[in-house]
Length: 432
Image (tube, rainbow, N blue to C red; front, side, top):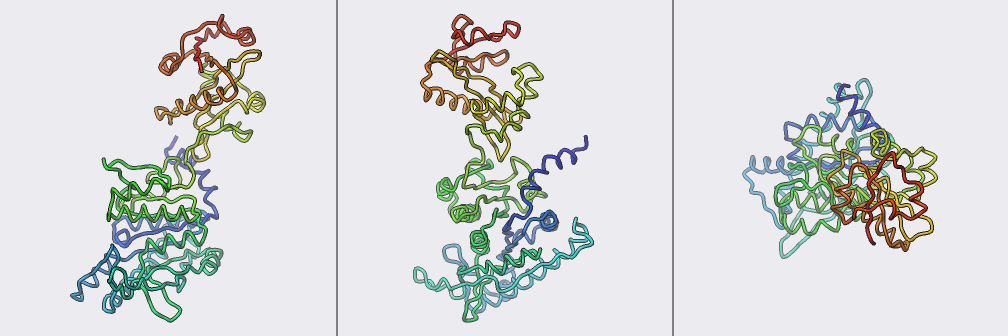
């Protein structure tokens, strides 16, 4: 089967899930200058064609630095923010204006090679961000450097309803007509919060957040972010991570950090189950919970291959629906990737752990241990004293987790009478 067919089938649930959602995408000036910028634009147009409501926020730091150098002006910063005096503001306006036009032109050009070929793509921008001056901090006057005061939520929403891509620049305007230089991260974060965006997507040079060993951190909760910020200091990764966490605290369900240097990083993050960058989410991306009737289809898909191999006892849909309350599951981004069941044994203080299964793609991640712990906790809460398990293929796994060899004679009568001697399952038990 061609690889693209498999990919498209796996991506289809996300295509449906993302349709009519609002995504705020932040692309720094370095990303606009990178050779991969054309691919990013193409991917944004693709998202738009799939029904995603897009707000694109661009940065302009290297472009401003270039204008300053051309005019013999030195850049000045304090606490990571540019000090924008009058000559610097002229450079900012020049750089941002040229960059906005270049991005609009590129979005218009890319339509000829995109799924939107033959239709008209509208890019809308304007005075959609109201700003105020930062003023004087620690004795330092920031002049025309500002911070976001208000996002024109109604105006942007109307443009999105009209199927426009909204382009926000790092400039804001005051009610008195002043222009302020803003941090694009601030604009993107505030826009995502005030629009109630479904996602904030932040582009950086790295694949995502890297830990102290250079390994990609795949997922974080907002409360885990401060420890990383302390390690990163003034690194730009820290700025992206801080923006992602701030958005989540403000009500955005998920923030993603991806690489502007990697071709297809945005699509990989949005249309594959494990993504390719760093996810900062309010809720757990993967959770262990009790099963509900809506999980029956996912459970059948998970356990059917194991039933065909003779590893698990066959269970029909009717049986699963009837016994669904016995199951605990691991859910990963809407997909059931592991399960286990607890069956109290009648007229005894014992229970049976059954139907422990993990999707082959997610083994070796400790999910079996998580489910075992869940089942043991449920058993104790139910007042059970002993947990039995019958297995044909995973005896050593249970032995390593404290289960002791047992026999049919040790099973309570209600379970012993149902023992299948043809399957010849090994019996283990564990005192709770």
